[in-house]
Amino acid sequence: MSDPFLGHSVPRAPLLGAGALALGALAAVAALRLSGTPPMTVPPSPVAIERALRFADAAGGGVDVIDGRTGEAVAHLAPGSDGFIRATLRSLARERKRQGIGEATPFVLMSHADGRLTLADPATGRQVNLEAFGPDNAGAFARLLAPAR
Image (cartoon, rainbow, N blue to C red; front, side, top):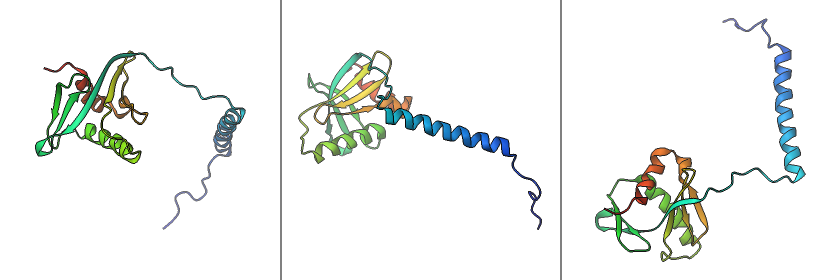
């Protein structure tokens, strides 16, 4: 078998240009990091809607969602459904257990003026930016903001 690339080489100018670009980017990042300049952040948007929520295991493997202030039922998550909500809550509950914190403090679901949706755990200080997981997953939580029917 013969080598199809025999006698063909990569042009030096584009290769050197790509290397210079990569080194320049690394040098710029290093200079900013070493200068102590704080990273740019997006200022927090005001909270438009907020709801305290408790989640309780229901018979048969479901989960009852309860308003943390009024005690009224918000929703019922059927067994095997709403996997994103369950996984997110499992992560937050694991952190509470690790810190030895009970279930007394409700989670806080917030919709911000800029459309972002966050789930906060006031007991641990953790906050999950739900829009980072896509519109379908954020929408699963967004429906819990609606008034109970």
